[in-house]
Image (cartoon, rainbow, N blue to C red; front, side):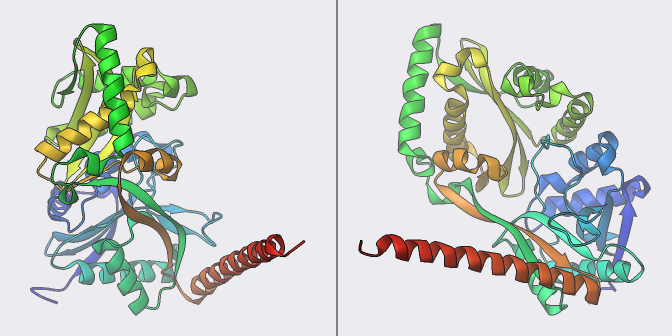
Length: 390
C-alpha cells in the first residue's frame, strides 16, 4: 500500500488535535472533488451551535498522519429512509438548514479508491462491535470521482446500495460558454433582468452595479439584516431570526473569510444594496451559501438581477470552472429556469454492516421497485383505456 499501511480512525470532534485539523484542512485543499461544507468552518460551527450535531465524528483514513480521506458522520436512529441505526452525512437536524447539504467525502486525488475502501471497512468493523450498520450519504454528484469510488468499493466489498433521491441540479459550467452569458443562462431571463435593471435605474436615479463586498468587516452583518427583514425573516427561516443559527452562520463565514474564500456580492443602485449573496470558493468551484433581496424593490426582481450580474462576472473574471448554487430539490425548478447546465445529484444508503442490514436494505429496495412497477402498470393501463375507441 505505497509508503506505509493505511490506518483509519473514528474521532469525536472534541478529541481532534491541532495536527488533525491541519491535516483535515490540507486534504480539503487538494481533494479530488471539493466540498467546503465538510470542512472545519462548517463542521466545527455545527457541533458548537446545534445540539443535534453533538454526536458528530470524523471518519478518517490516513497514512503517517497525512489524511487521505475523511467524512464527518452523525449517528442517527432508524428513519423512513433507514431501516436501522445509521451514520449520516447530514450534520444536524436543523430545518431549514442554514447552509447547503452536500455529502461529498474529501478524498486525496492519488489514493482515493484505496482510502474509500479503508473507510468502508472501518464502518464494517464498527458495525461488528455494535455500531450502526448503515451509511446514508446525501447529495453526491452522481458522476463525480467520490461517488464513483464509493460505488466501486461498495460493490467490491458486497455492500448493497439503495438510492433514495436523484435530481438534476442547475449549475454554471464556465468551460462550456466561453464567457457568453446567453449560453449559461436562459436568454429570456437575461433580457428581462436587464429590462428591470433599466427601470430600477430610472426609478432611483442611479446606475445598477454589482459590487464585491468580500472582506469588508460589516458585509455579513449587512447581509443577515437584509435577509431577516424579508420574507425569510417573517417565516422565521433566516439565520438572523434564531440565535444559534445566526452564531453558526457568522462563525462559518468568519472561518472561510480568514482563508480568503468567502465571497459576498451586492447588487446596488446609487450605493444602496438591493440584493446580496454569500458564496464560498473551493477547488474548481464556487458554491452558493445564501442569497437575499430588499423587498422594497421586489417589483424589479433584484434577486434575479443579482443572479444575472453575478453569472456575467463569474464567466468573465473567475478562474474556476463551476458555480454550483448547492440548492436542494425544493429550489430546483427556480434555478433550472435560470441556468442551462446541470449535474445529476444523488443520495444513497449503503449497508456497511452484516447480513441483517444487507437483507433489510435489499428488502426496502425490492419494495420500492415493486411500488414503482405497480404505478407504471397503472399509468399504462389508464393510457390504453384513454386511447381506446369509444
